[in-house]
Image (cartoon, rainbow, N blue to C red; front, side, top):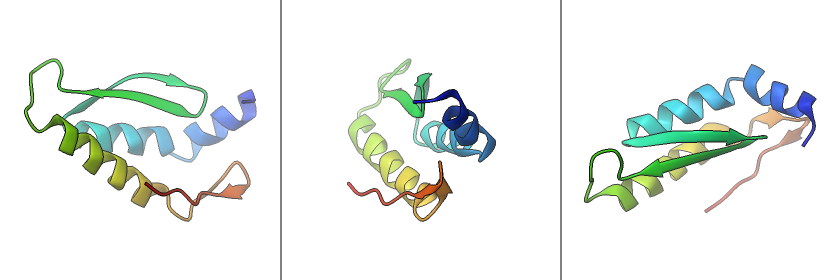
Length: 79
């Protein structure tokens, strides 16, 4: 992935929105790799509902980016 694309993703606010969504579902972003976000759930405090929270976060992220044009192509993602 090229540097320009990473900057485009950051400029469009995708990273900020995805980080907010993950946090709202009791997750923690551990790192960014190119245009990918690595997150974990169930830490630092054990959460019996971590799997459901991760799934709900993924659904919310998909809804957030659906139809957005980033990197000059339209996101059409699904679970």
